[in-house]
Image 1 (spheres, rainbow, N blue to C red):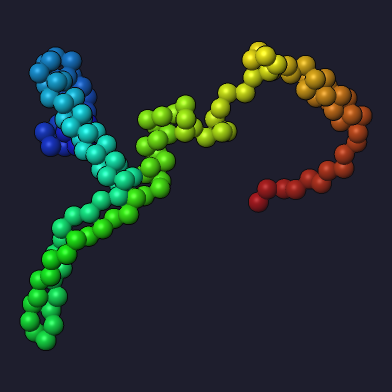
Image 2 (cartoon, rainbow, N blue to C red; image 1 turned 135 degrees about the vertical axis):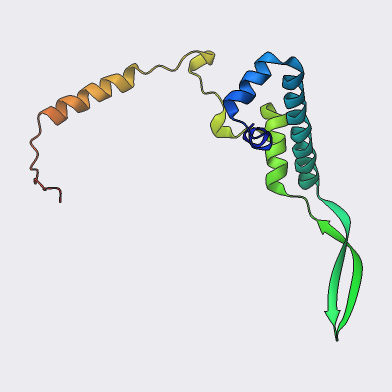
Length: 138
């Protein structure tokens, strides 16, 4: 939205006001977002799969300018593929660390044992004495 405000030489508050007041303006802004999102989806998809395109290099050799056409190849990008799959098929591709952990038979995790251990630790700590050195801040 900041880019729209700059292009229209106005503020984000005014853009927000116009979006509320004029449904056509809101539709135009949202349509622009959708178009940009679609461009990114397409680019990510191509990057994940790998792609190629025609390109041209310009060389200068012995004072002569030479243009050479060639095909630029981009191999599949693993990070793009992983990102795509994690978002499009999260049940199959999410990280193991993000899976839900449950207790017995899918029930809640029992934490009573942890509370008892924390209380025992607290009792042990309260019975200790600690030597501390006072350090002045400079």
